[in-house]
Length: 355
Image 1 (cartoon, one colour):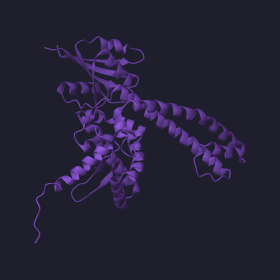
Image 2 (tube, rainbow, N blue to C red):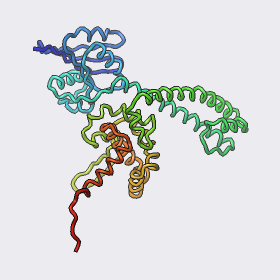
Image 3 (cartoon, rainbow, N blue to C red):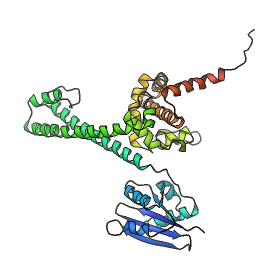
Image 4 (cartoon, helix red, strand yellow):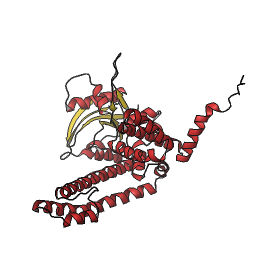
């Protein structure tokens, strides 16, 4: 009989509770480990044979997953809501959570989700980091613009150019406004350099990834959107339907209907916030250059408004990019295949006599 050790881990930022079971004797053990005091690597290194560690998905477990990969253990990442749904008790604590994860693993009912590769994790981290930098720069620009308007300047553009900042320096400012504007403009220089450095790093990743180049052939999809699509969706063949892709990113519409009552809500927002934002930005460009997408956008905008039409266009753009990546085709091939599919019902039909 092959020896397998199952470990159910209730993971927290500073500690973890582990319920583990060796299949040779079937005995369940419980231990609590503190990340600062205990030897976490030493504890998991003591297990030999096949070792499977299951835990709920969280934002703080990347170092733990990397450590388990280095040791050679198998990591199962579980859907937190699905794991909790399988609990048949009302009490919730660390011990019971660890025992629940172990029980589900032994039962063969563990709701495992896809783990990103290390490369994808790093690229998505850099994309989120760049997004935070852009947000900080926008806040500084808005503050400078507010100071300019309060001082009598009619600035309509962002306060990022030297011309706009020069006009603000020459304006008659109060002591407090002068102090604030000088400090904020001093922050912009290093911040712009940091953003440029992040852009350079991401551009290098784009140049060496043929998948990103492939999806960038679609109008509106730039390097940032291409990187986010590729490294969020990979591997692409794990999705069997378009609905699954849309739901994974959180662009699927929600509905709460019963009998005669029909209630439609917004999108679920269950997936990557970063990818949804980038797809929305890309959709604004795509609807101006792609004729089919433009027609679709205008049709939805007339019925539901521009904001909902943008979300619908972003959803359609996501599906297109996924199909291109799954089938390994560029935008031109995608368009030609789409035309062929539309013409297929009319090809080969027998002619019908008239009169």
